[in-house]
Length: 384
Image (cartoon, rainbow, N blue to C red; front, side):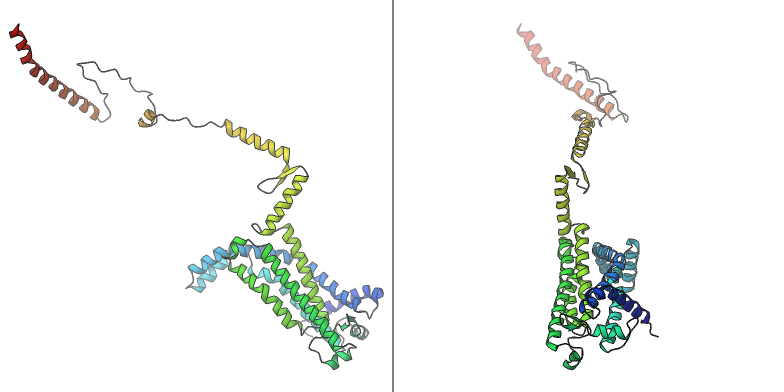
């Protein structure tokens, strides 16, 4: 018993259950019954993967936010790879980011993809697998989608295609069209993520964004190369999952875009327009509130700001006095002729010394003036 046998059983059981639902409607041997069974298999798997898809979106955003810090760590410890790895793991742990979360949906889908590949290959070879018995194998071999058998491949020989009751040219046309649609849907999905849900200002300096841009072109090429080896049923599976991813991502980008992206700006514009039609307004924080209440709140804040006490202007004399004004200081008396102005003493006595020195100098100047004037007075007495 192989390790993947339980998975083969699960995939085959799901297909059989949906075939029982669509068989009476389209016919048991109809390609639509088997094709829709594969489509419903994809839908069932993708519904179960929605929690992982949400984690993928969060991980992708966190990786974009952390890129500047990651780049800083790489530059700081570029010569010490072990320390660099430790610091990056520490950063991931502190922020709760798992770099592998962005790959989880694809990794989880791969086992189902290989299981379906195995089931369809056994059907093409006429072998039973899981819950698909001999009668169901014959029914699936007779099922055609647009003239191409579910188990046929692009590289199959003409003899093998004829054994499945189909034409080689028809099979190759159908497979090429499905491969192109599969690659195009993958490209569109990746492009809308890069163009609409990424901050344009961070694109140039964000290595993660540059990697996503490269993958936007690499994945479609990979699908085109490997698609020629896929049976038509597997192409139906992968085309369906790509279309599901594209629609799911479109909804997420529209409702919960990355801040700073084009989708975020468009969402804010839509919310503002919707609020305007409802008589409401959108605050700078992005909340939708009643217009009258918001205007009253703004008016109240302005009134509160106007009543707020403003600091009084300080005069020049107050600034010189250390901002204490003239409180506690003695009023200065006007100087009287012939008297010496007294300077109030200071703590260190320097002002008093300056005042006494100034008084002595003034007295000496008056004596010199009297000496000069004395001869003139005597001359006046002699004339008289």
